[in-house]
Length: 108
Image 1 (cartoon, rainbow, N blue to C red):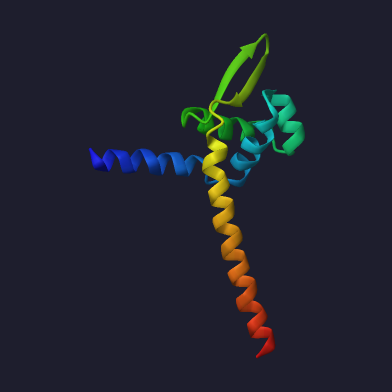
Image 2: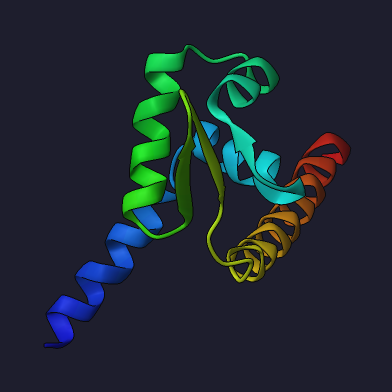
């Protein structure tokens, strides 16, 4: 049972592990958008975008609805931003440490 919990967590984190997927999530922060709008805003090919949207939908991060010929995507649960915020904070701390190390190398 514990192995399954780790697998579920790993799959969720894997869904976030691509720059385009993170861009999609940030773009959809402002609200529901159709595929064409996302393609235009992010500058990715529709076939590539469709793969990323499917992964995010299957992981429960996005939900979709169809209206006529258009498919609209939105963030399914805003809690995802609470997940991403500490990741950014962690990375900023690491960057500051790296900058500090590089500065000390310059002085040497």
